Length: 130
Image (cartoon, rainbow, N blue to C red; front, side, top):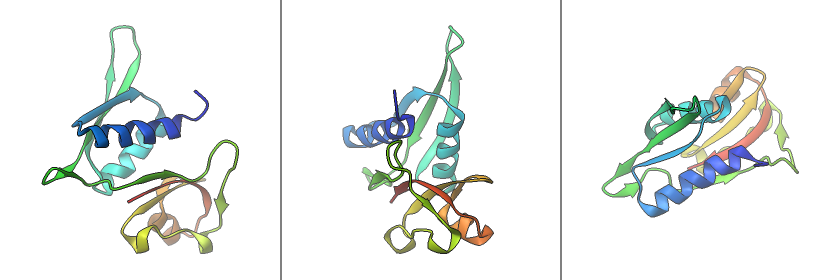
């Protein structure tokens, strides 16, 4: 797998389109950090790390729905392995005029665009979620 973040976003997108309540995938610290941001931003209900019998860790994400409609309307990968997108703190993107969230990889860890703007720190724009 060359792009685990795109895989994460695609698994969530496919689970939403299929109407699934949960989606499971291999765990990593980066995926767990993205899940923590989504939970904090109220895009998902919860996430947890499950350890299998063969000591392999899986990340289970429980998706959030309102009246049968997913809270997540769209996911878009911005910075890819072939084309990295870096921005300074003054040019951080606003997703859907503040209704969505841009996840930024900074020297202080993964942050939302609002948190990065408040801390005046730029970084790599990982994805947009709305």
